[in-house]
Length: 356
Ligand SMILES: [Fe+2]
Ligand SMILES: [Fe+2]
Image 1 (cartoon, helix red, strand yellow):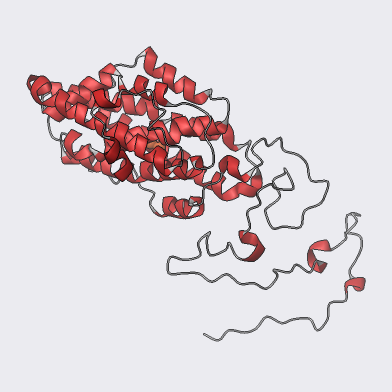
Image 2: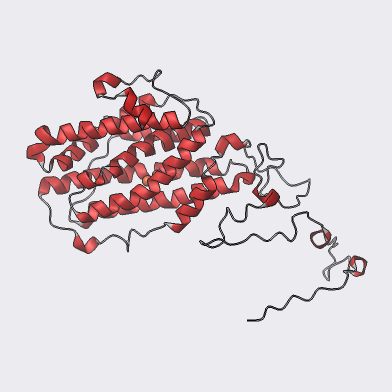
């Protein structure tokens, strides 16, 4: 294929351009005359295509610490000084940014999956009644908590300065991910002839605490670092919890998404944290229905709940607390000396936390 160079006018005669449109509006042709320093810079697509990282070239890649405007003007455009204030309250880069957020956005877009097509629903085996009840209870609780991780970013996103567009785009992918998680667990609860089981007030109370957090930092510490970190560890134990290969696949797919959300939160919290999340963690960790249903699944039936289920569940809990504390270390907010959790009682080893 021959590439023909576009024909260029020898010299644009700006003075000959009309100053009034056919409808009588004044025309200033600023967009055509503006000599932007970045004009002509051509980002190169990489092996994956043209990513958001590829186009973060020159000044387009500069994310300001304190954006000049509070409008939806695209970062890098020439902005009229009278651009309106959208009422953003998160106007510092440290309020929302994390160093990995652009890459996480690209990864999220590349790894979207379908709860309709990608789960072999037709292969669900007939399960013992206690096991079916247990997986239905686990799916009920998961369906209940998944959407908090969509509602919470949604609540804050319109308050985030538009210069942090990549962070907002990432949160959009998280919202879509959570919709799919709510979908897949709701589908599993119903798909095998079981259904949705118990929802209790204290679980709802925790969700409300997260949603009502006073600052985005508090909200994201409670949700990304704590709540989702906790869920991530459950998904990681999916091999042991899942009664059949169908649920194994569900947990595996959801785990990939959850890991991104936690990665954003951990890196974001590096900036600052003001809230003490320990209390809420303990509250979720002691959700009775969820805990006993997990114990039945881990034990392989109600008859093994005491000799096998509860010990394995305690092991899961120990892993959850350990990786939460390790995540805090990574985020630069060590809690080992400040935590109110009874580390010895829970069997949590400080050295393991630091090595995690
Ligand atoms: Fe989720
Ligand atoms: Fe999530």
